[in-house]
Image (tube, rainbow, N blue to C red; front, side, top):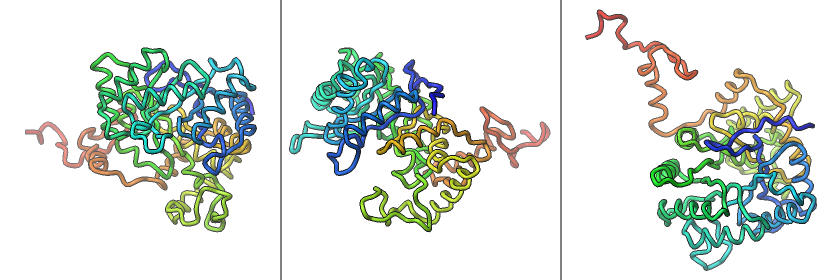
Length: 365
């Protein structure tokens, strides 16, 4: 496998990233699962060798060890001297300090302390992309944005984004930055896959409108779409997989989708995981898709999605099999599209003629 990457700019920014982002959540064994240091280092090296340049972690991943593994790799390990060639993203918001109310969240005190320790563990002077990990409903949006702006002005952070925030919060935060001449949000990290498409209701359209590149996490729905499971091969609760036998996602709806994924994978001579990843990578608004490989084999397979192409017809089949039920007014707005466009095609979206429309001038009042 060779480097065939066409890099993309992240949202409305000049930051160039690989279409596949290496997620480092499982670097370290501190959570009872994951990858040891040597294997983590090997995966980082292979990812970079394949053209990857975007690595995502968080202050709380494996109790901080994930950041330390990255810091060691680029400071004194095999990647020494390569730090400036890589886009490192990390997050604040998670609490590593039991019984300390300011140990987590989006308040200025918690944010500054978290970034201080992230820089220490990463052994770097700056963070390329800082995410607010979760929506903290106890902290005003104004305080969140002023704190992140302060970190940018201090040179500790270069770009900012939000992870797992409601659409209305993201829009308000972006509006605050715009109105006050602050640093804009350039990215949004959310769960997105063939089995999690409810984000298409508001989060994806909001991100596209506000210039925030989407970086989906769990594009294989925690392994359900990896190709390992089928009606005849259900997960065993023996610790070999994080997917449980009673997973709410392993139902007839999913098995119909998996049938089509297996059929496509067979026809294209690739893996089911690669098809599922490619579908997510091709979605409107998506900049870079986060993979969470725990083994070198998984990394190699996931990166192979770069060479997979889906036709419009193939994508449409997957769309139909995974179509979500979206909240009001999504279905209604789709229904009234004919009344708005009346037989025309706008930005690639076609419509039938509106049956209640006047047919000619004689019918218009």
